[in-house]
Amino acid sequence: MSRDAASPAIAFRPLAEDDFDQLVTWFGEPEIATWWNQAAEYDAVRAKYQPRIEGREPTEMWIVEINGEPAGLFQCYRHDDYNETDAAVGVPDAVGIDYLIGGAHRGRGLGRLALAAFGRHALQRFPDAQVCVATPAIANGASRAAVERAGFTYRGTCQPPDEPPAAIYGLDRTD
Figure: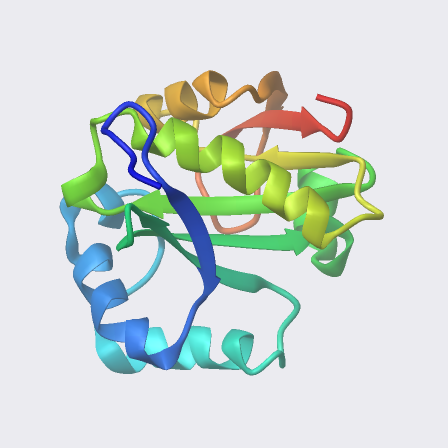
């Protein structure tokens, strides 16, 4: 099926070791480095993400592909697998998501589409969760706007561990 710019094909595939070089590139972009606490070095990327790929940590990692091209990194996890985050955010029965869109795909409305699709994807992955929660930094206006345009609703603010103050957005299973 052919897609145009207004309705791109969006797909998620599990993160693989072959993606680490792409992650290093994305983490080196100033717009991402400002908000994502990850060194843009291969060994640091491997140390953090290899255990997740192997299932030794509960966070699931995904590459979003837009029209067949890697466009960003998404992750999802049960909040109650991370007690400090769960307590800080304070939304029961939640699956959390974090995300980044690489420079070639930013600023074109694609983040909104990917976030809407990933919110549904995360809720499917964790059928016991009642809400999908995103917590972009309060100062990250672009990310907050994308989450709102994706259909997430504002629920307040929080102070996640080792992160800047954040806004809480939720997408209920019934949405």
